[in-house]
Length: 296
Image 1 (cartoon, rainbow, N blue to C red):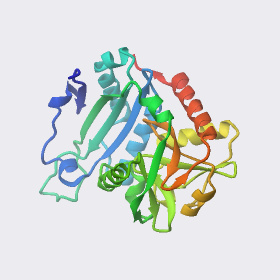
Image 2 (image 1 turned 120 degrees about the vertical axis):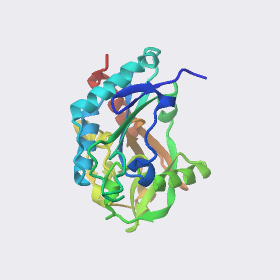
Image 3 (image 1 turned 60 degrees about the vertical axis):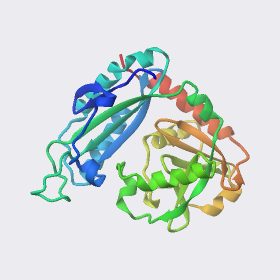
Image 4 (image 1 turned 135 degrees about the vertical axis):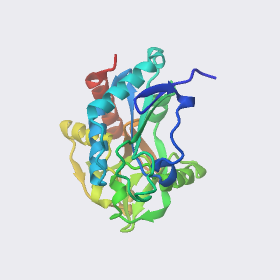
């Protein structure tokens, strides 16, 4: 068994196996919480400020005034990474997850009142496999999730810990031998994957669904849109009916851990090219390596 990683619980560093929260925590009892996931790129951090800004914004949009500053959260993330620097020193990159809940439920206020002044913050670090990026570069296959989502449900645009629907959809994908499941909304339009944003290349243009279709606009999504535009690609946010796949040249998915991964097949539809996807993937990796923050 490999060495144990170090976690951070409310600013205190502990062995990950000893990281504990209360059984009365909002996250445990009701799935109330927010999270952000990202990674190191050859030991460098990318987009931490974007992730923390979204975390604070999501909390505010939910009516929860998070009593923690981005500076404090940044300090805790960097402390946790430094406590796990031996993994990075060995040439491994790591996945970082920040989970924030409103803390312990106060029965006197009610189980629906999550304006707690003392949130629970847990930061985990997980080493990525050495071949993580090379395996993903080969591309993924996807299937459609067997259920449709109403696009006006507000939590789709919040990075919330209530992830049960996505867990079930990803389990469905794996049972079909696929890597990812893509959601349709109740209008029959493609929205996103269980943990990824979706892009489709059609007629030489790059299309991606807008947030109002019922999806979470990811940090990697926004970065890819910026990089694509800088490379001269036409990027359009628009609804994408399922029938679009019949004439799509390419498709790819993004998130802050995989970066950008081509889709080679969606259901029974094979996608003929990965040229644009791999060019953007290379541009994204170059950006992360050049612009990343030196942790140490």
